[in-house]
Image 1: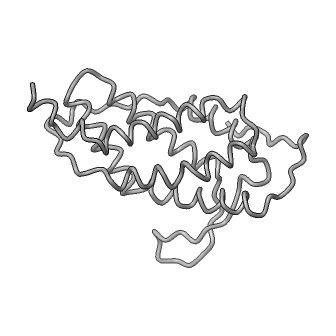
Image 2: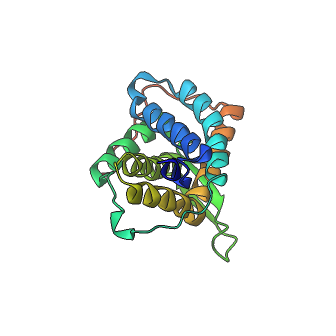
Length: 183
């Protein structure tokens, strides 16, 4: 039993990542009760914390890759994306230089899309980790770390840059302005 409790899937860093991921998902699940100002204040603090907790995760060797699963559906993604897009309104879209390409061309991206992609990765991580299986827990940690290494880390940094811009520059929004749903 002690050997099982000392397994890396139960490390302090994994448990802290779970805690921050759960808080992020709970907060974004309750957007109706959150003002855009409170949401920006929250995101300004949680984005660096998420990045830090991800960076502290150690590599996990997966014993059974077949135990991997995805849970967050396309419909759930679209619903959250549209809610966030309507929260941020004109501040949703912004320009970046994509470091993953060899070009120095600016690319327009969406804060709502960034935050929804992060939510999807974290939600799948949480739900897979909650399964009563060591294999599932190993896969959950492996997948969230691989996702951050490949993409979500960059997405989180891009989102945080825009959140900082909104927080510091505080562009006024027309409260009646509503962006039409894309999906």
